Image (cartoon, rainbow, N blue to C red; front, side):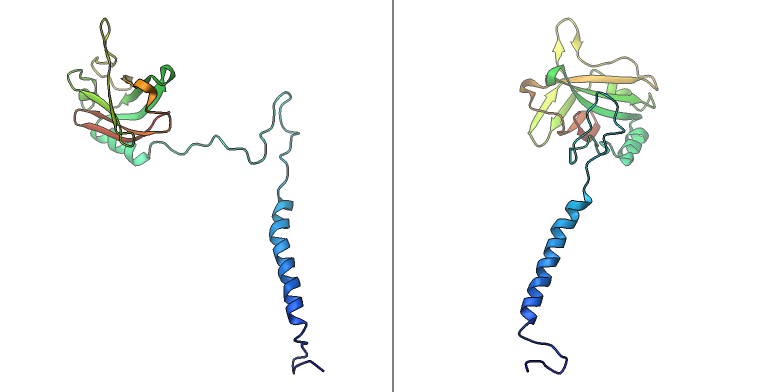
Length: 180
């Protein structure tokens, strides 16, 4: 007799352990597959396609933290800072909304140089000046509640959507802006 005092046949233990390990491993791979189901197509509108399961979403994280917005509003009198690629990426448009015209006065001053810096690419872009138009930036007296803009030339489209850039206008510096 090959049993011990607990009634175990020790020559059978490795076979049982192997079988249990195989069942456990199969459960790890098969059960998650059964939990995935195809998205219902009954609720979709006629003539539209349902997004395939596992398709990437259009969710975008917050591009401008609330703490930064509060800082720029309190110190510089602006909010809604954004950088967007326009004209097929040849220009980058920096726009902002004025909250306090007195604090934001330097942003609209044409005498103050403005630059857009991409620290990763190591480039510094400036506001282009055209013969008949002048600088591509608004320079009127700022008014609270209005949105103002300036354009930066992007030769060779070196700054691309998704890049994080900085905008420097005199003492004003907006960092970690994501290009849309």
